[in-house]
Image 1 (cartoon, rainbow, N blue to C red):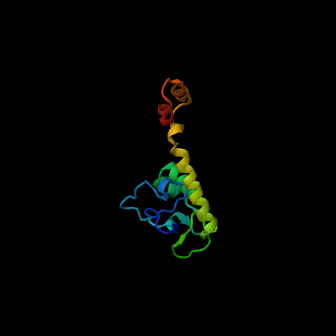
Image 2 (cartoon, rainbow, N blue to C red):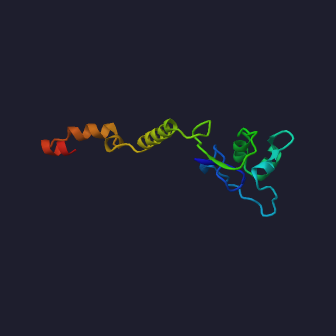
Image 3 (cartoon, helix red, strand yellow):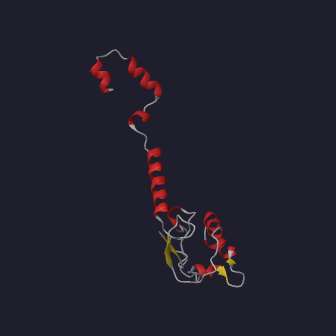
Length: 135
């Protein structure tokens, strides 16, 4: 879940950034604090120039790539992993399977961590069957 937001600087709302939030900090005298402050009301587009002055290039690109909603409602929680914003068991299951797969890829088992050449040398060692079984 993530917030459909209003606070530009502190809410976790930017899906293409690590942790969904800005690393750039807010200047004390900056009057621009809400997401709507960075949207031109006449064109309903991002104020790209203002954004580029306030945040890093990577953050500006991530922000301006977010499509704007025509709904001016209040903040609400939405499910980030579904385009509709609604949670479903199917999307939750898919996310959990993707996470489990990523963990399995990152953490190889003991036999996978040892190079194949080393295994060949280990099996050629002259030893009792019980030692080979242990290996």
